Length: 157
Image (cartoon, rainbow, N blue to C red; front, side, top):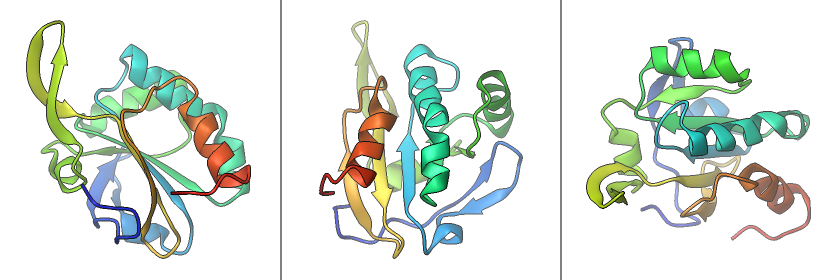
């Protein structure tokens, strides 16, 4: 996993509209890059809707929100439309970007172990360096915590 202060790994992925999006496209402004396991599942919906509900505050402060999961562009489009998500969802179908960020690994659910996305959020500074990493994210209240950390005076890191 990359470390705070290191350059964020660059990527180019298709978003929920099929447009190619690069991390470098957002240089000059902060980016909230959140990795989530699967579209339209309870935890992932809670997390996405938290970012949706705080989106006006992110936009007001020129902070870009990007969600990344291994789901397809089509799956992302359905998820976006169903929950009116106003930010890009990026399709990492081969999980190459999740692997580059160190968030693809073993998970256990109901006694079964499998490989998947470890719910993690990265704050990328305007210069492309990592400001903060949130591991083992709890979906409920996560977006509000990020806004507090970024805007409420809490020191990143």
